[in-house]
Length: 205
Ligand code: SF4
Image 1: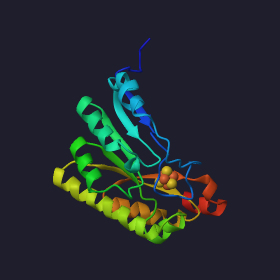
Image 2 (image 1 turned 180 degrees about the vertical axis):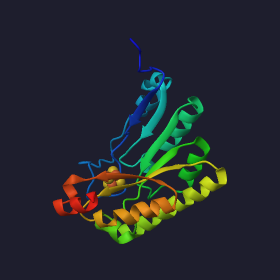
Image 3 (image 1 turned 120 degrees about the vertical axis):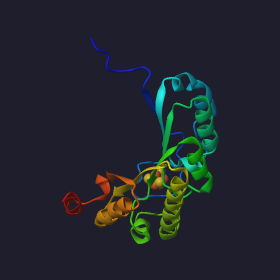
Image 4 (image 1 turned 45 degrees about the vertical axis):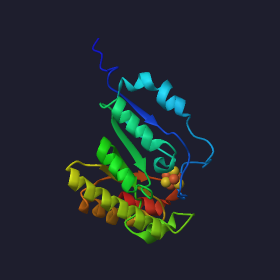
């Protein structure tokens, strides 16, 4: 029988903590416990044999940019296992120059959960802080990342993602057009708890 699964071609998805600097109304997390995160021994020692067979590794939160030790971990992966393609999902609010440089250095690919085409829509789903300012900062980080891409002539941004809720469904078209205008791919996620039947119809049309 043909073996269509290869032991040499595996992917790993790691969510090392629940830490997050935002509080999105649609968040799947029920805890944001800042005192608990994955023991570094697991990342560096227990998983080491697995890295030899890994081609794609995705880091998810919580929020990776505020999880301690993540920049060092990405550097470790890149220097010890240069064949692994590393990717991460971030809300982008703290995806600052340091992270952009790291991505340029290591080939890290990034999906940014921008979630709206404007600050007012974004703000409507945030229960902490000024969503308008956070959205502006996140978009600035996205633009800085695109400028960096031009310098290194390699993509860093993989996708801009948006969760559709009752606050954002009317913004879908503008969001997708904005992302396309920036030449970035889009990921749309449907949050059924946050969207009523009427809005679901509109987004589906
Ligand atoms: S950025 Fe992600 S983890 Fe953080 S609150 Fe929003 S949905 Fe939850």
